[in-house]
Length: 192
Ligand SMILES: C[S@@+](CC[C@H](N)C(=O)[O-])C[C@H]1O[C@@H](n2cnc3c(N)ncnc32)[C@H](O)[C@@H]1O
Image (tube, rainbow, N blue to C red; front, side, top):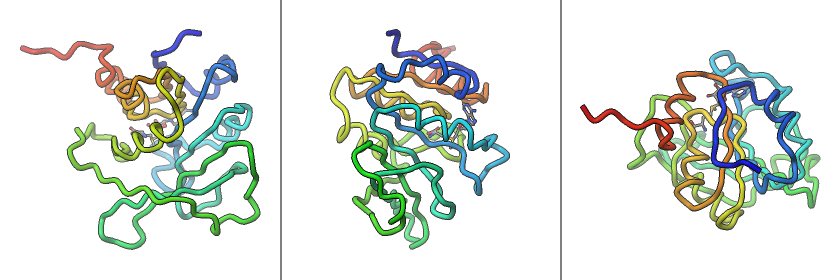
């Protein structure tokens, strides 16, 4: 299967063409229903479609709204801003267990990461390199294929590339897609 590419299209349409068994990990940060919902084109349908994939998944989600799918564990991303309420949840879906009815009580790990030393690409929801690195290193090996249907500026794909993993990414917005293209080296930066 072709890997190490990104597409500028609706991920629901794209996912319908993607063979489930070729993906080792889905790591994604979809639009939330409560925060930037309009700006990021929030729609539950492509998020619900993730259920068709049987691979391990990590899905970022707001702390304020119920997650849409069954899950195995909740991880907390502590943003280390100094304010107690500054965190987001990351739902792990590994197919082994279903803790949905116990939500809010299973907090399996904390991952603290700030944007320190990252290049900021002007996407309000760009995720820190170290945060994504932590999830990829703990859940994949070199050569595994990681898919991000809502890649924004391509952080997941970029970190995957840096760690010797393969990637596939999808982004609806043309401007964010072009940033991802540059980050991943598809477009040469102008020197003069
Ligand atoms: C929360 S942001 C992801 C930011 C990303 N983690 C980063 O580090 O840059 C969610 C992204 O999903 C994109 N998006 C929304 N609906 C989409 C869809 N149907 N298909 C593909 N991308 C979509 C938005 O344009 C937005 O950039």
